[in-house]
Image (cartoon, rainbow, N blue to C red; front, side, top):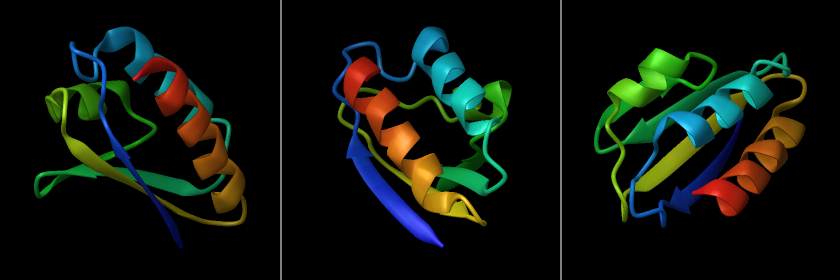
Length: 85
């Protein structure tokens, strides 16, 4: 299991477009991906679950990947986060 921490910089927080990009990318990996923020967590492969977290600007999120391609999944997630959030 590997983890990635990231602070959301986008003034709109995690909104539909970047959340969709992240979810779509994570669905391409076998590893289980979980997004945690403020004591809540969601499946990183489900858009509505991710949006339900209501992640705002300045929030510190943690992505956890567990599986055979966990490193690649988190590398992809980090790229999407940096470029879009």
